Amino acid sequence: MTYSPPKLLTFEQFLVEYGDNPRYELIDGELRDMEPTGPHEEVAGNIAGRIYTEILLGNFNWLIPKTCLIKPPAAQATALRPDIIVLDKATLSQEPLWQKEPIICNGNTIKLVAEVVSQCVARVLRVEATDEPVRVSSNWQDDYARKVEEYAFLEIPEYWIVDFRGLGGLQFIGSPKQPTFTVCQLVNGVYQQQKYHLGDTIVSGLFPNLQLKLDDVMPC
View 1 (cartoon, rainbow, N blue to C red):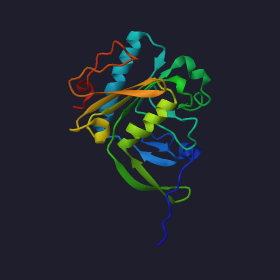
View 2 (cartoon, helix red, strand yellow):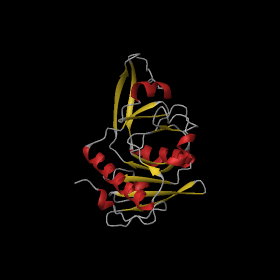
View 3 (spheres, rainbow, N blue to C red):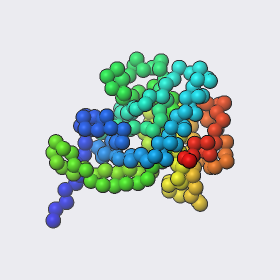
């Protein structure tokens, strides 16, 4: 028996097949199924609401789009779809794709990204045009490792990882595993990470007046 490796997608193929589907993103040509659950969406909505309040109170010229893809310039077959993204309206005119599609290419347009950690899944789909198998996976390691590197390379000032189920590996959230809110702040091109647990007051460099605890965004 011979092994046929899964078909990898290009960025262009991903846009045609899955660009309008908020469930999927692309990392190094591999399709990621984020498989959002009700509690996942509830947490993401709670966080977006808190951020939007801070934007209004601070009178920042920023927006939170309903859907948005990030196309890192150094990754040819990657399209990241963050759960929450804050964009600087003043720099949107410099985005080459924004007027036609909600795609961001320049890191300086992004003020903050937040990811809500999801369960791991793995399965095989088939691309209709070729009927060839494509491996689909969603992994907390993307949020804690790959995206930390990508977002730091893009020089995004702040990145939040909201692990409300405590799914991350021990090297990321410690022992015992518990719900964890990680704030990554960019310092000299590297994220300095601070972890918060239930009951802790979260500190954000981007929103100095933020009054937020992980308890405030947990699902019912």
